Amino acid sequence: MAVSQVFPLSGVVAVAGSRHGSPWPVAPVVGLVLASGGVVRVGDQRGVDAAVVRACPGAQVVRASQFPGPPKARLAQRTRAVVLGHRALGLPKASCLLVFPPEGGAPALGPGSSLALRLALEARLPVWVAGEPRPQGPGWVPLALAGVPGWALPPVQGGLF
Image (cartoon, rainbow, N blue to C red; front, side, top):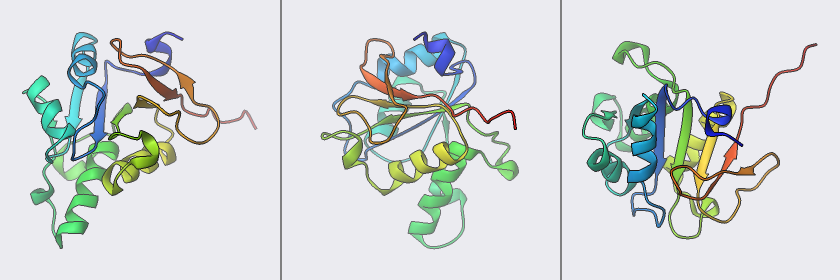
């Protein structure tokens, strides 16, 4: 499957992942997004977020401090803005989501990455999850991005009726 059939990498590409880092390399995938003309959007945490910013100093970084409320609510609002955009901040919805899980793969996702994945699936965005094992649920297909193995879930197309 060609990357262009699954991901509009030339659009706004949201990235989520573990605060503890990921065994799957972030930099080559970010480089592929940039080479495709895409814009990278990420949160402001350590781990994967920080690795994305190191690979792409011009990434759109959405900071939890931009939102009101207690810390947990700020983090959730930040994650929502990374994936779904935020009108007041001038952020359009992402065209796809890339997820870099911790050791153990998608079953070991933390609350922020799990929220990002759920929001992307609900919005019918294409999703790619790095590494193994295959995420649970139907429709996941193997797809390597920039040589990094992973699994893609193209958006479900609505029926004609």
